[in-house]
Length: 319
Ligand code: ATP
Image (cartoon, rainbow, N blue to C red; front, side, top):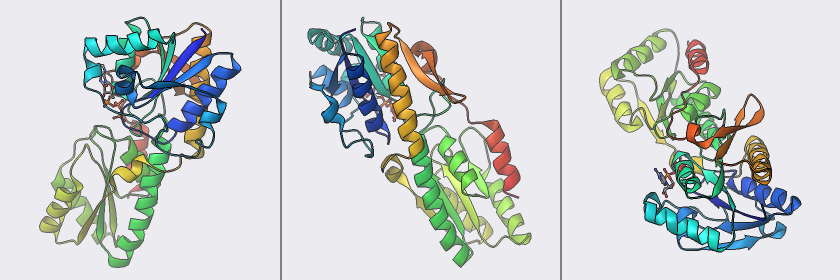
């Protein structure tokens, strides 16, 4: 393989830059030319791509976002759009492609592989919802951002004796809520994977007050409930004073943590070496502290469950 390209697609996440940097530098080490595609699949359709060298990816390992830009492209979901994108790659002599993104982006990569492009996917999303990998690039940074918010909100919840509800991201998945909630000592963690009733939440809060708890932290995954609605319900039902913080998109930004930079660099190296060695149509995942190759068809379209052990532990520790 003489020429490959790298693309970031879907929602951006911290660590994408570290992954691009590693793709470029490992490829150059292997004597392979690398191109960068701007603005996700939209840029691939528009032929918005250019050659990268080692210097093009200098000074980015520490930055959140993606210097290539990212986008969501409806046109790419059509066969016509995919064919146009594949034709553009082939016109440049690009044989292999590293796609960094979430489930939608990896599904798009699988479609491209069916049009003759050799692809390797890297799981890049803060949501940690990709099957076949213990962690996705960006998750650790997002969790640390959520944890920082929880720590700060705990100070003020404690000072006023309030119930503080913190809504975190994660789409239909509770990994960010569970992990940040456990690490932040939340009393209640609400995730989409575990059905709950608002009345049971109220009951638990009232009981914990009677046991001497002076304030409460509830972490709510965006896919489980609206923290704003739940906060209103709790104060109407129990008379407890509630405050709500929806952390929002700051969870998607910021300098990637050590864990995300290492994960991105390791997965990216493996992706390039797989392409160079003639393996493709795979996603590089991280399982039990090892990079592993997972058929892309197995990784996409599935939901990775939250860890039931973590959920159980969070419940035990919240007493
Ligand atoms: P995140 O999890 O951060 O939102 P994502 O990669 O899942 O990232 P999506 O918006 O779902 O984000 O997908 C990104 C892009 O991938 C879409 O805009 C589209 O161009 C392409 N894509 C998504 N689903 C498909 C599909 N079923 N077929 C082809 N392309 C797809």
